[in-house]
Length: 72
Image (cartoon, rainbow, N blue to C red; front, side, top):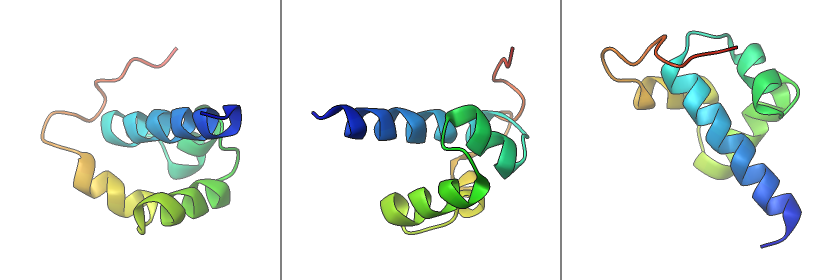
């Protein structure tokens, strides 16, 4: 696996966790995951999942998930 693909996969995985387990804004999720701006996050999710980060958040979150991720 080339380094760029590994990094992108890691960033998307981190964004998934932040979307599911926190109540951070989409802009904060983009920044903390390393994708930069909310626009970059949006296009990465459209490319990989064919939906927006907000739509995926609604699909991923389950009752009791929000605010269980420890952010330092």
